[in-house]
Length: 164
Image (cartoon, rainbow, N blue to C red):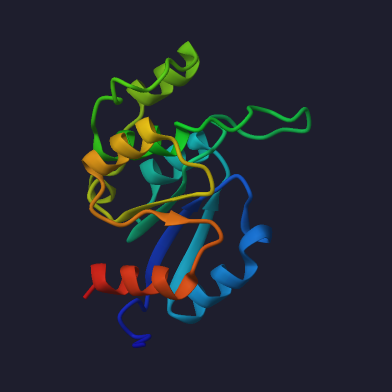
């Protein structure tokens, strides 16, 4: 595998499990030239995508909307990664998606991703599957979905193919 293709590339990894759960995967990505940045919720992901430029985004399907706090914070929502993907692409939320809190809806409608982030490869990763979510993701997804546990070599192959 060539390691110079990805040199200097930055990946935003949005997963509430965080870097401690994916030490090996992050190490292998960094060894292949990817700088990995982390967000633990939809809101953290939106903030990062609105402020910084990324070359790829890895989205956990089941995320909390807000920041996880000492009180447990938001529980993960099975639609959250899909909704973040739709927001990133500048699309209206899928009709099959259940309603979200009014405060989350305001965040989705008031924030924008940086223009150069709108078309970056976005990969959905999940250990849980829902037919409606899968159908909504497939409508806007050009990159394969991955299951947990992640196969890091497959992930690297997809990332390299997208950046040839």
